[in-house]
Length: 441
Image 1 (tube, rainbow, N blue to C red):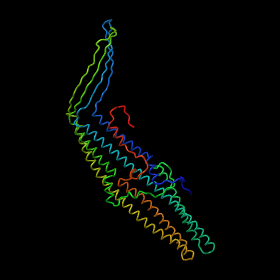
Image 2 (image 1 turned 90 degrees about the horizontal axis):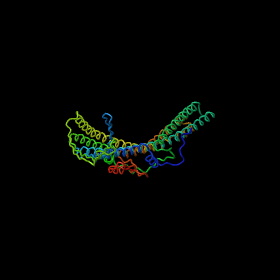
Image 3 (image 1 turned 180 degrees about the vertical axis):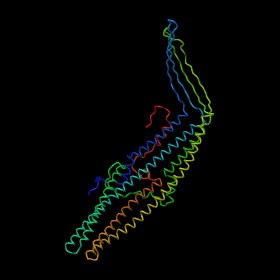
Image 4 (image 1 turned 30 degrees about the vertical axis):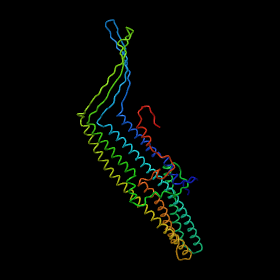
């Protein structure tokens, strides 16, 4: 039974990671979210800048007195100016909050990047593992077919029994079923790989050159995670945003000073007189207003209480983030050490069991062992080989899990040949946008 065909070209793990980083829609969506958050900074900064508007109006009036009809048309035009001079630093707090939220969005993108790259590694190694399992179980089926034929030949010459044949047939049926299950698992792994990488898997190779990024000790791993992990940096940005939100809520109780001004002119046309009447020159005004909130139905007090609660919640969430990251580091470190030990043990077990199988076959041929002994020895060898495949896969995945737990699973740290997705330049640019019609690349 054939499994899904693979492409003829080879795909290294670096190529798979590069393709996913370039094409993954989740990562692209996170990148756009960072840009969107940067626009909130510009929106908040607009609160400190003037607003200028132009107006043009027309009004038609008519009166009747007996048989006399009088009408006139007036046209007015003007420009209005309005700017908040002082609002108890509420706008400044909102700007700081927007900056913190933009930073939070940036770290969220980094976390998404880590999750995508780790998913690619897991999908890549799943295809490698399942491909090896399919081949191993196919070899196992071939072995059982040979043992079944040998049992039948021995029965024909009177050296075997029908029980030997039946036992060989049963093991062959089990081997075929196990092989089909491996094929189904490989098909699922290939589909998962295509989802994250964006193309069908080719000839994959589990070797990589990223082990040098692994911290030398668990203490070093924990230190790197605390300084670099996006979840921890996101938690810090959330605290900043919550503190700024609390400052903005408190500032709502303070005074607000607005500067207003307008310049305009008007014309009036009388239809009866067929002439301009009351033609106006240019007029203008400038005003300064001060307002202080006295009572707002309890909304300002509720806003302060909610902001304070959100600040406390952000601090508690940060504590949870620290604990989760620490757990991930310890778990990944332990998984890597365990996988390495499992590989060493499995290699020794496979070498020893291979000799056992060869010895039992010789004993069976000499009449010292039975066909069942051979089948049992082969089953044990297959189990040991599958364990080696699983342990090898687990070590690679654990390596990249540890990199993710320390915050180093990124395109920059891995040295991927890609254009790094960063909205820092965009954020710096939009903060300087004053003109309404100015475009930003």
